[in-house]
Structure formats: C-alpha cells, structure tokens
Image 1 (cartoon, rainbow, N blue to C red):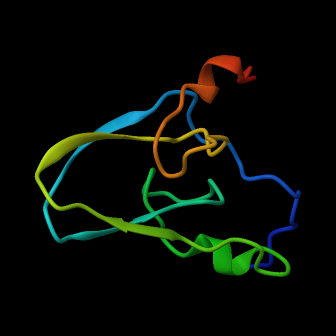
Image 2: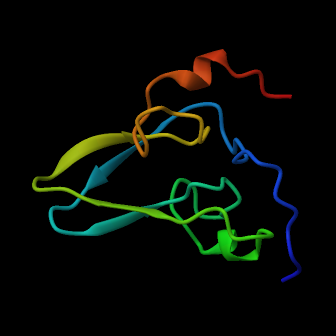
Image 3: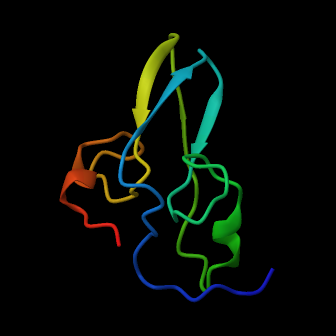
Length: 91
C-alpha cells in the first residue's frame, strides 16, 4: 500500500455511532485514523499515513454490555460516542 498523506485530522467514516455487544476480557482496538475497512475497529491502515501520527486505542470490558463506539472519530471521549457526530456535516 502507498503512503497516505497526513491531513492532520482523522477521517470521519460515518456520522453515527455503532452499538457493539462487547465480550468481557476481549481487547478491542478502536480505529483512530478513520481509514479502516473494519469500522469502528482498526485494521492497521494507520501505519501507511505519513509520519504515523495515529495508533489504535485498545480497550477491554469487565462485563458483557452494549457499548456505543464512535465512528466519526471526533469524539472527546474516545472510543465512545459523545454525540459530536450531530455537529458534523457529512458531504
């Protein structure tokens, strides 16, 4: 894969969160760059961005529950949705 220019901001893949039923003890690697094909999770595409400014954010949970993961990548509470997507115009 070719180098991807660093735009200084993550890409907003979707302007809505996604609910995932998480499994206790499993590690989830949330995508921070927005370029993954496995939204909202990382597929290591960030490694091809010039300067490698992004890394996955790994989280795990103590209990089975429904978690709302951010897909717009603009949240102030990564990897969780904080409704920032409501302020983003997708176009």
